[in-house]
Image (cartoon, rainbow, N blue to C red; front, side, top):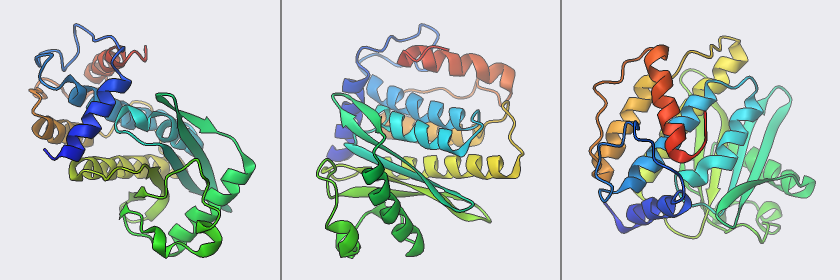
Length: 253
C-alpha cells in the first residue's frame, strides 16, 4: 500500500475514533490492531451505496455524498451535481473541524454550477482535475475556502452515460486504491439516479455484488481479514449486516 493510501486510511480512523464497535460487526473478527481504519472506511462506503438505494429524490443522493465522504477519505471540500430536466442540481460541502458540512450559499452554488456545466460540456475525464484547463472566468473566482486541486468522479451508468459528477478537493495526492473505490461509488450513484428517473426504485434492492466487490478489494488492499462468504444476497440477511455497520460507525439504525 502506498504512503498516500495509508494516510487516507489514517485520516478515516481519526474521524471515526470515537465511533463504537459492534460486537456482532462483520468486521469484528479482524484484530483491532490490524488496521480497523480500513474496515471503518469500507463500512462508510458500503452504507453510502446502500442508502443511495433507499432515497426518493436525486438530491438525497447528492446530500449523502457531500456530507459523508469524509468518513471514507480526507477531503477539504466536495461538490456534487446531478442532472435534471432543465439543468443540474448542486450540493456543496466543506470540512469544518473534523466533519463535512453542507453549505447553502447562492454565490458558491452559481460558481459550482458553472464549473460543473463546463466539466459536463467538455466531458472531463475521471481523475485528478487539471486546473490549467479550467476557463479563466471560472478559475479566477475559485473560492479561497477550497484547494485548487481535486479529484473528479463522474456519476455514470451503462447505456446512459453521465448523470452527474463529484469533485473532491484537497491538497494531498490521491492513492490509486482510493480512486478505484470512488469510481465504483460513482457507478453505484449513477445506477440509483437512473432507477429514480425510470421509476423502478425498490427499497429492498441493493447493489450487493458491488458491495461485496468493494469488500474484497478493500480487504486485500488494507490487509484486513474480512469474511464475505456468510453474507447472502437477500434483504432479510442483509438488514442485520447493515445494522451492524451502522452501529459500528455510531450512525444508529
